[in-house]
Image (cartoon, rainbow, N blue to C red; front, top):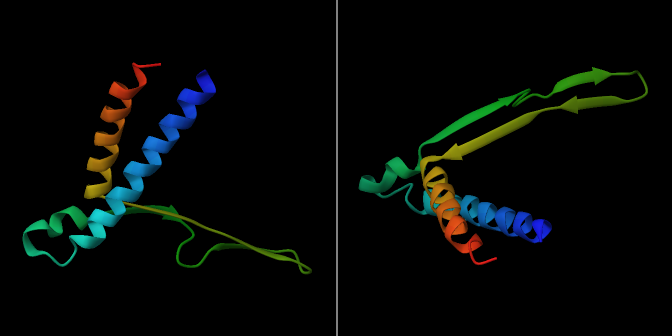
Length: 89
């Protein structure tokens, strides 16, 4: 039962992230909705990754995370919907 709730939570969270990304992309060129597409970036090693050269192998590591205002709003809405939805089981 707990696994089922966890999987549904992840599904709601991913749906909020994806829907927010689509909304942010769609509102980017609309003047009065362009604030929804403002993004913040977090990460390290970007655009050039942190490199480790071991003579025979070379590794590059990097991480970048971007989130927009629309994604934050959609995540909050999807979590509120999940809270109401999860009371049924």
